[in-house]
View 1 (cartoon, rainbow, N blue to C red):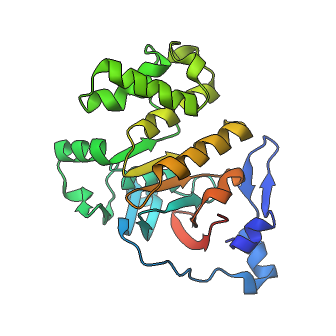
View 2: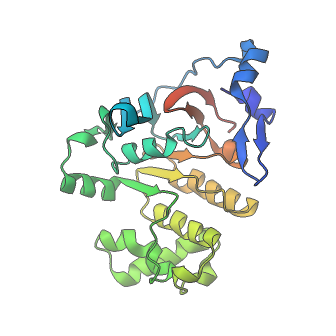
Length: 274
């Protein structure tokens, strides 16, 4: 695993297709064992999310594939936590479990004091709507609606008027640099523009918990900095937290902590570069 010292010295590599990926962690430890990650002291704060011994697998017997293997950690109010690690390491599955989109086979998730595994379908849906905003890699945009209408959906679900919801949606579209695309149907947008629409929709509900899965890989540097600065300055506070899965080293400066995950296991934490 990499320490924050390793990160600051750019122990990241670019693949031939331009992705940022972690360097060989085992080699780094073998070469410099004194850089092994040590526990990080966290200032006492209220806990927003508790994950305890989370396990998730698919299939049974010889076909069983373990996606998350005994994950336990806390996320604090006022904290921006990044989860990093190789593709296929269980990061997205863990996000789905924490957000209530998927049930674990073992373990429990406590969100704002509620064990979400004990909530029925309707109560969980209401709790998620009022508490959690999630951006997954598949976006879930409605292609026949305009950009502004897609962003307005969380407000409509909370019984806001259509007119007020559209006004707010356009404010958030300006934050992600799409104010001039507000009235264009989503199907006509580029992949990167659709990603920004999904980010705006996640932010508009001003959730207690904001969860983002690879939110920046399709964005240019200026857009990345503007969006992360807004999240950090306007959404993150003593009553909220932000959880981001990322392979994008450009945004590490915004992290309070970085959690490493590989082969379904949490392998350590380090301080962010903020």
